[in-house]
Image 1 (cartoon, rainbow over the protein chains, first blue to last red):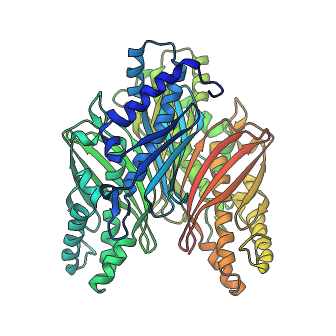
Image 2: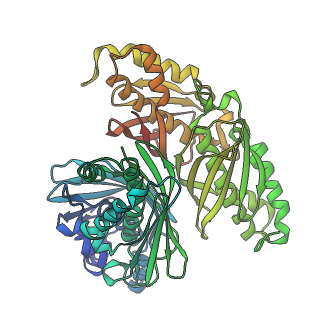
Image 3: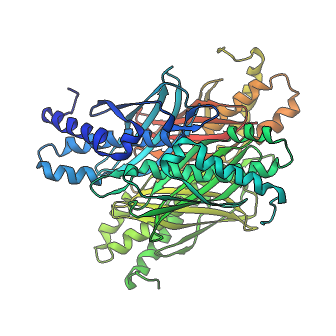
Length: 157
Length: 157
Length: 157
Length: 157
């Protein structure tokens, strides 16, 4: 367990992962698999599929897939911070609170063509306030080449 | 026909619309319908479907759908500028040129929850250089409420 | 007086203008003159001086001047919203509240060289929440050419 | 000397440093001191002065100083790439080329109040294309706390 993570939030995180992977329809379209979700880091994987292609001549990932996955990866990490702060609140309140976390703004820089069999996106925290969190995200391909980076600002309180 | 638009690029634009709607797999997932594509403006429509939902409690559009559609709408407008400049080039060269247009960076501001039966995204030109174009985009819902805005920088030459 | 503006905030706005023009040292360096400050719009003028030049060969405004002025113009408008919401609070509380308004993030797009004898920057509201406000800004030169645009996210509560 | 840096560009870099520190008027206002300028990294220092203050109650750096210094630090690194590519061109051509390097867009995230006696800004390369370069920047204070981060897109060819 990490520094600052309360012992009893692991079940909450597991519940959140289930939500992100199974209950958010567009995440299923993107094929988001949550590999790691901790207090200070989220790691997500997607596998290349034809549906996710943008440039059909070169067979590369659509920019919209990249921005959507980066945004989701940052938002997950923001939600863990919220879960941690309200670990003792009743479960019902949590679902409500999680559903109010939202992206305020997002910047994505597309650095290299999205070529690969699979891709990893991860996020870490730049700013963790009580009202607003700022996350930095990166996407690498299966050769560990940096495909894109992003910064997202999230409302968390 | 608009100011500055060469007479003979209409067939090229029609071809580009076909590509954007039918041949880009992830655009089909998003359900992008090109309503207007001119030298200075692009207008796109998407219809709400369950697959596009992010917040399943509130039934609203996934942020990743919003950023993907805004980016695509800006990129289309950037491509019309390229088509117009090379209207006399051989057709084969054009496909190659179009496929090299790419988003350098994108900022999206999410202003209101994406509630609605359908959504319109449009773009206009902020900067039209020979190497780089900057586009501004907006998305409105079926009540004409402004859902999100974006700015994209595209490589065009 | 505008829709939604409380009658008694004009003296507060006048006080805020004085602060922005006279008591913020770097605003004096920039030469910020507040022309209009209302509930939904801020308009600022700066005059060209040698100190503000970036490209000395072409004699144009430094990009840093542009981003600083755009940010300040958005921040002013965010502060009027805060003043309006707390118009009945004691004066001391207001100074404290105003001094906690801050820019979370800023995007600036530089569209044309900053040539001119003077420049106008204005802002309007994209999102006015209780915790976060999003402002859009524009700068024009003395020929009314659009020099730069920006979007700023501000913490307001 | 670094990997990829041509032997003979050191004098050119030294000349560029002189320009950035002495010949750009607004950089002198900011008090920019170039500590390191290499092929893959730029490091700049500014000292706190009253003129650079934004929040006079708390005595902290104006956000406009932060964005200006970050932008300048990214731009310098972009210019070294240009110098390196044209190391064999005549000197006159270089000045012209350098003066055409420009910021296309900039995003700044303000993470902590700008408190300190001095500040360091540094940049590294995210994308180094022939037409467009993308740089990432960071500013730390004298306690090595991260004050702000930024991403800039520059036109370089």
